Image 1 (cartoon, rainbow, N blue to C red):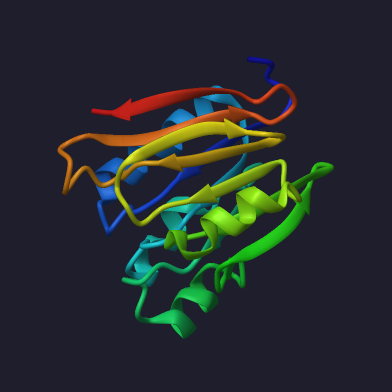
Image 2 (tube, rainbow, N blue to C red):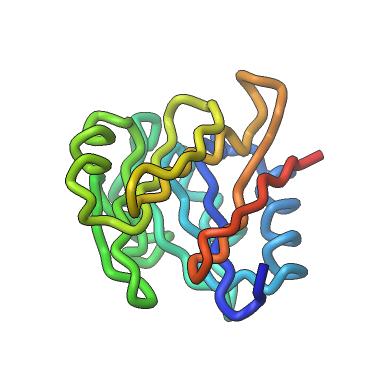
Length: 164
């Protein structure tokens, strides 16, 4: 895994501040350039834990993110309604929380990466040119396992990290 531009993919943090702190520390140590949060941050007070100089943040709302206006304000408009697509570093990326558009997004083969959350289950697979990643849950509440994924987009190498 090269260190030129590593991405951290996270979902379903559900206000678990200790785990968010651990994840951000990992991101800083590993030289992460971008954090993608796939929904269910839950409370606006988590924004300062995620927003750091030198690490770009991009997220989408999940079904448990109720205070959207205050979340938008605290996250400086870096949260979007999903599904959300964007070109990042020359890659086409499709983000969603709930996997309603998962199959059409994959079948379209328009995207280099499709990231989703909501299920709290890790799902990483390559279909055609598209790498699909659900990083599981970073809170660890439902499965007892708090996870995130570090991705090198240049070669699609990834690493599942467990937060302990």
